[in-house]
Length: 294
Image 1 (cartoon, rainbow, N blue to C red):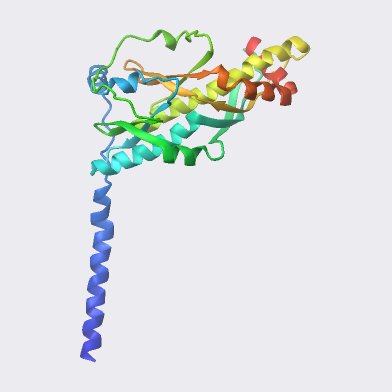
Image 2: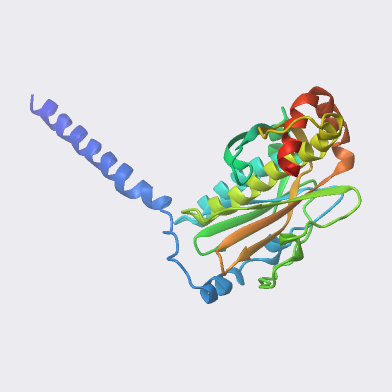
């Protein structure tokens, strides 16, 4: 009887130890650094000057695609890099080939069409994510305060400079998209989020959606010439597969605290998808063009 009591106490002690370990020790392994306090303009400039230049000006190649993975900075650096790499793989898969489907709605007002909400979904094409998981390379990693960055690529990993810096000058592409034969461009931005990595990810997402909608705008301009009787604004819809869309530049506005990203996409890799989309959605194309030119 004394044996059973002693065994029971040992079990209770073991449970107590496991409880303590689970709730007090393990969380320390992935405790995140709290988001930085609201920084002044000069402090933001100083902070972003410690970011690698490959973050602001992404490497470009006709053969490889490059993407940045984001994560919060954890207690153990390995945990941060692992999470940022996982995020980067998912982003890189979308760069290879992503289907973007959804709509952005508008309603008529006295002052003209007014934004009424949007819903978009983006998914890599079948098999692409597995391909990227097997074939990606980690090119560089960087931890800057509360954010960890990982640069990944498809194919062979090139040698990347470790130079750091931030150009305060407003890039021309913020207000005027580049014009390079064979490419289309789009800009995405985001309001500040609680964690910085979420802010940059949202800006990139908005850029990809903007790219998808730019195809719609071009196609709907054709629709308007076919039917000039439309006079009401509706939903701008898209359902298109985009290939090789990637971020090529980033910039942060320290005055207004807004992040910007510039993405481009080669037309030669997307012409078939665009033409196919035009055939299947000829009527919806007409509606959106009314909003664009009203």
